[in-house]
Length: 232
Image (cartoon, rainbow, N blue to C red; front, side):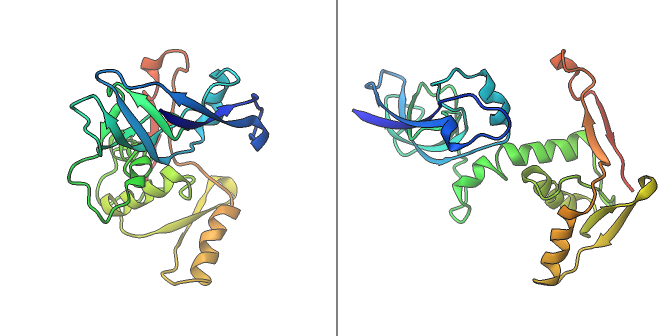
């Protein structure tokens, strides 16, 4: 028998959670049935959406979450032992799946690229950045793109894609009165000068110039229909 350690929601929280809101529990997993696989987590992800999604959980439920996992035992020919997958198995060390919720990592995944990136730059974070910038904003070559919160997970990837697809220069932004925005080229120098300018990005004011506006929160089909992407 395999024992799984899982982080559970001990008590609902308002605002930012603390250690006291969670509890680590150990449970014994049953034997595999035909068509099932046993997964062992390699990497777990903790994402901002969990703060909101946790409200739908009952106290005692396992925290949701995506993970990169390895198949350690299999009764499913589509996922032999040793297969590395991405799964929404939650915050747990081991889990059982029938394979329907699993996504294999590409066979051509380079050995030099950490598989943990499947949870970030090559996962949900990267997809959000790519679809948001290329499909929704429709950025084209030669344009200059302003990214709000470019130091965040998605924003930092947007900045890299923008350098490849739009304009190869880097800027940090500072707000000014009357709705104007100043652009300052990032110094191509090492620390401390370069790091000080990057830190200034977070201290100065913010201005959103590329945003997606949800025209309706009640009808999912309407989400994302209205968007503005101002380029300069």
